[in-house]
Image (cartoon, rainbow, N blue to C red):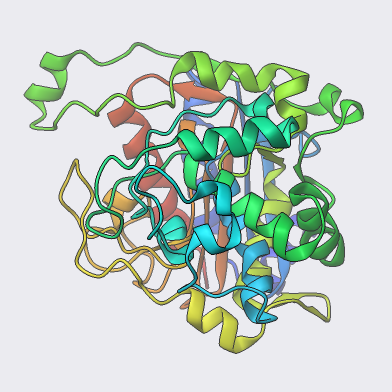
Length: 382
């Protein structure tokens, strides 16, 4: 028996099903659409499968974009756990500069659930390097709608505020706190928020692939055209710039390889790794409780199913939330722009990380790819 097969079977992964999954993962690389892909499956706190295709190797780092939100949120969970932060607190009581232009009643919980009311607030990543500019931006932001009244995805804005809260309540910079309190204790050296210059050579560049769908193509499929957001091709390409990478954008500026990202979700499931516990069982159970109630997304009118900074798979509409069709309702995680997948299923213990530097312009194809890969991954247990 090969070492590869032995490692899979030791974790209760089915080699035949894994092979089907890997065949699906490499399809677009073989077809010339995607330039680089990594995938990893982990279970019982260990990586059982890790493969790279195209220009990627297992040591490559990939921008994980909004999958960073899971890391930022998990860091903040430590503050909740230590009673240094409460979901019911008003943000303005922590950051007085934030409390203007109608934002006085925004709560900490609303930041994590995308119900805060300022989804399109402008902020340039390099402004984070200046406290004066950061707080000035916070003061200028206005609400688009009453906080708590609806769900609308905040691509980056609310996470900038969460990062500032982490700094004020921990006494460390956001990136130092994430590194020293979360990633280093878990031994996850291949997840980086705030990329140093030395790591640029092994970081895959963002590339855009395929053709953008037309409005008529969306209409033919009976799907509404996605609304415009700050997540444009131009913005994503800025993450090829060393100065932007170095900021550590809390809502989308993390970098990782697939193996460590899959292990990160093992840590969120079990509380830690290799005997190191960061999150208590009480904390883990709490953060996975849906806080968004019956609020739905704007595009498909499906339940938002937001826990504390993470998405809960939930009902049969889980595919609309970026999960496969075959994982359990308890599955949780946070995916990222361009098709990055990051989640764990408590029912099977399987965690998945799928990363690509190639951002498919065909949003429907990208979404279907994620659902297909997620569905196959969820069934890989023996």
